[in-house]
Length: 478
Image 1: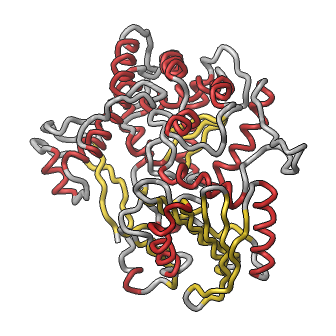
Image 2 (image 1 turned 135 degrees about the vertical axis):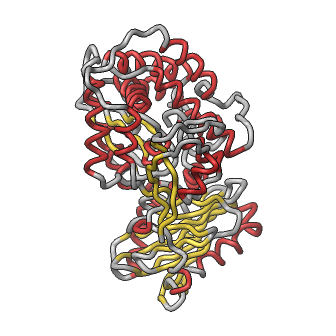
Image 3 (image 1 turned 135 degrees about the horizontal axis):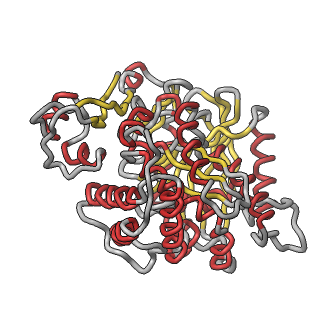
């Protein structure tokens, strides 16, 4: 939190659980007027390329506000140069394409309508060479060029925006299987035409598959809810296809691994201190000088706009955001409530003055259908902040105590907890002759275990180095 899927295609952990909370608090996002029209909400429909451009520009503003863009001009120029080179192979260019890096550690890439292409900081860290990055970008370019968002919209148009089954979440977060295959096929062709090795898509997908194995102990079995082929299946198909494509590297081109590693050397891994960091369930913001503890065992999420946690069963959540203007607390809270009620059937059931530590605050209670929410408004850092707790009304006894305890934990950052803040950085080092991944990690003081170190570098973990190989490690820097 500042002041605050492509290959995986997963919704960020907290998004599904907070969807109804967002509806309660601010209403559904809409590109049209917020006024009611005969009781019917207006819907943006992507019928033409012009619609893509308009809606994509609006969505890009939301991405920048919610996820944040990485402020690294050199890395941005690197990604942009590869993207523009790939565009030369498009037979028809309907959009003015842009390429940006979102400040997110989950390895992810996505395309918005109208040619807005994004890759995450975490994806750049996992990628091992220029070819892999080119294949990722090529895949996303095809999604945008072939207007897959418009086609997918037809699938989800008649689903209720308040329904939260896994099938709906998967539909909204993913393209169809055929669209993914199409983006793989033509994305690889774009790469080959631009002088990049199309095999990069297969090697990167295998890295993703290994990442799943590392995280959960085994590759995830495909389910009915998967809306695209699994990484292993796609990796095999892409490998076979790459073998059939003719391509040629530009004469004099630098080593593709060296070029990429030079670009990401020094990248912060994990939360950056200026956006706040988690130490277990304790959130620490050293710049704004506050701390807040979230319920133990809950799923944690720190985005550009909010920091929060979701219950393991994903039916309750608590989050903190500083998105309202400064002013009289009651007036700000009343105005917020009025806007929420214009958008959603929300009842105000509680309104009282409370304290957040030494800070005067007001707490409002809301109910909407099966959902109940507690929202505490308080002044901090030149704005009005909100602590939001949301629970199913039928299970409020199970979660409300933990949420209120979390809310009461907000307070000034102590010196003891400030000392817990550290920075983990990706560093590029040279392997020594006869060294293996275990010895390399020990010598370079990598915080990763050997399996993770091997995964980070796209290796199996049983390699013995000849000496001079460039390797990625993660070091902790106080």
